[in-house]
Each structure stands twice: as structure tokens, then as C-alpha cells.
Image (cartoon, rainbow, N blue to C red; front, side, top):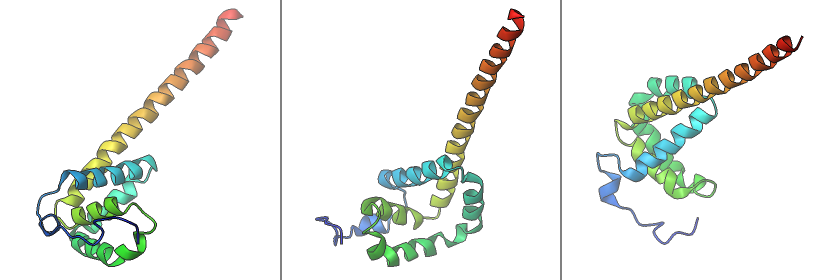
Length: 131
């Protein structure tokens, strides 16, 4: 098990709260950013919309697998993600964050393409003016 002085301590108030905390929002934000950066926004959002009623079951599966993935991943972030998935509105928040980061990524791609086309246009126009 990873060394953490609070590894065996369970905060029951946070475990069963109905509100998404700041650390849980950060975990959701990190997942959404990673999904958008990899270009998987559309399939992931479709999957999340499909399994939205099962988010509690997913959080309990994460709880069951916690001893295994604690060795590989950031333990605290996954606990926060599991606790967030325990709440009904978390999937909606995650989908919204994915949409937000995907729009930002598409805007960056669009701006990059526009600047490349502008440079290409100036290069072509510059060569025609020289002839």
C-alpha cells in the first residue's frame, strides 16, 4: 500500500455528503481535461450519458478495486473521483467540463489552422507579386 499517514482513516462526513467538494471538482476537472486533450470527448460524453444512472455502481466498483489501483495511480485523486461519482450530479458536471475543454481545444485548433492558412496565403501572394 502507498505510504500515507491517513491511509486507513475514513472521513465519514465527506464519504456520505451530498455536495461535491473542491477536491472532488479538481479530480473531475483533471479527468475532463485529459479526455478532451486526447480527443475522446464525443465517445466519452456519449458513454457517460448512457451510463448516467449507474454512477453509484461505478463508484462502488472503484471502492472494491481501490487496493489494486492505489499502487499505480494517485491515490488521493482517485478517492476524490470515487467520492464525486457517488453523487448524482457528478456525471452532469463531468460532461459539462468535458464540453468546456473540448470547445477550448477546437478553438485552439481552428486558430492554428487559420494562422497556417494565412502564412501560406502570404507566401503564395508574395511569390506571385515577384513574378
